[in-house]
Length: 389
Image (cartoon, rainbow, N blue to C red; front, side):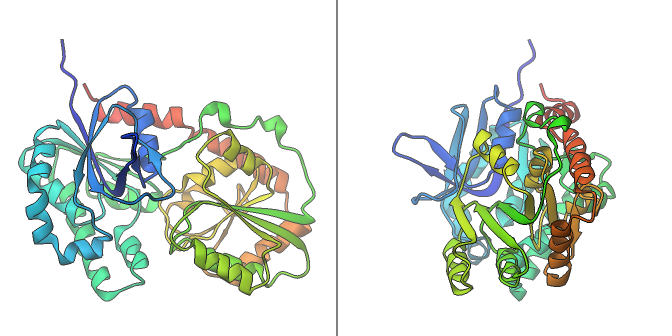
């Protein structure tokens, strides 16, 4: 009988244990990972918060959390890193000793340490490179000079690790990152962490033509720096020649600031904050009931909300960053604009309202494109490439 590999998982998200001993994570990527390995026991290690946070995602009962001391940010962790390691080194060593395969989404100094220790033990590593760390850390820290240096050091280490460690497999999100890492290792593959199943995708016959005289706009995602929400709200405040509403689904650290901005621009009757909605039929119906999905981010990997919106037959408008150009071919299955470019963005909305482009064809093209990225297809591809016992 072949013994199953013991799996370990690490990312930079935070964890919380509620009064019922249920473990919650701040990172939605774990929901995708859990669906792939729903029948496996998994050790996960990460920082444990004493406070609840939203949004959060339940961990399955087969996940065992090894809790580390909490830190507020990667930047603050760096300042106390030697002390932090002294407090947590025994748990980290125990974690590494008790896994055969490490799954890791690296983006911080603790990731670097864990990768190095795993390499010394010559254990299999599967990396998920979801965003450009150099851009991500810089944006989250308002382009702080020290943060930029830290981000570059971390990303450089990860690149060298992939290049020099033959026992590593890399899964990337988006063509730009895929090309970079494929140049470092032939064991690099492009994937999508899809939440929707084949059965969630609308039938092509359900895509009917419609009028866009009053636009029902939708945003789904974290309310966080770099997502372009302030830009979006300010752009919408300048529209006075057609009617619109914007539904914002999500939660995050800038929610209060966004609500204040909406009030200051007298848009409270047009912009609705619905809060976080777990992936469900309710969320899928939110997509379907709107006309246009907007993702105005300044930094992205391969955002699944774009695929989800496509699969539900609505027009997608997104910024031309990260992996988004791999999802959207401009005016073929959606619309692209340069991040932060107000004129381009408003021009697209005007084109949609005037309906001078074949929006029905664009929506059908998007629906067909989304089928390739349904969860079942991505799961089967990943399992084939990692070949676990």
